[in-house]
Figure 1 (cartoon, rainbow, N blue to C red):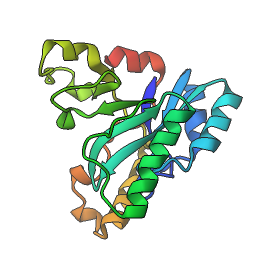
Figure 2: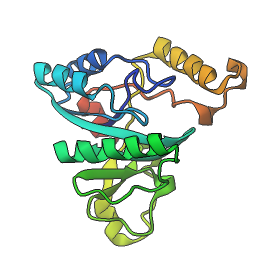
Figure 3: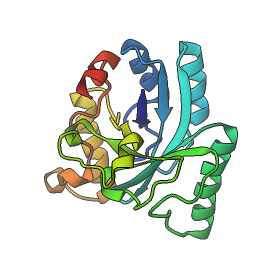
Amino acid sequence: MYLNCHSFYSLRYGTLSVEALVNQAVLNGVECLALTDINSTTGVIDFAKHCIEAGIKPLAGVEIRKNDQLLYLAIAKNLDGFREINELLTKTNLSEMPLPFQSPYFTNVFVIYPTNNVPDILQKHEFVGIRPTELKRYKPSFPKQADKLVCLYPVTFSGKQEFNLHKLLRCIDHNILLSHLSPEQHAGTGENMVPLRELKALY
């Protein structure tokens, strides 16, 4: 399962339409897919429609970011969870307050933290996302946390050409030249979907 997918509704970051994202999932044998655009749920309705037509189970979520830093993913368990996510986004947008560094208390939402922003205590609905590059070096802070680990393999583009487009979008977002763009300001080269069997083999 891909739990961290971006479309072009991740403004100045994602490159794929929701239809193209779903088509990629079909080609790679994916049966369940989460759309987690950056601080936005705008694409979820169209995404769900395309997933259902393709026989894929859609999951609605959001990637909470502060500038270039991933804070956590929030994935709705149900419609009430989707409401909770949108209430958080609406409240912070209207108040012009920053999104919380760690998630507020959700009752119908799964939360996945990156390894560099894990709270001291994980709630029942909270997990830690592990990228393939982190498998050998990440150590849970306490033994019980091992049961809280999930695969975190982001999808942002479909190939080299779109990766280059992604980097240009990041330059526009930062108002800098391509030569000044640092690795921390853009996605890694491997954020494209691979067949499900390859994803499982990575882990």
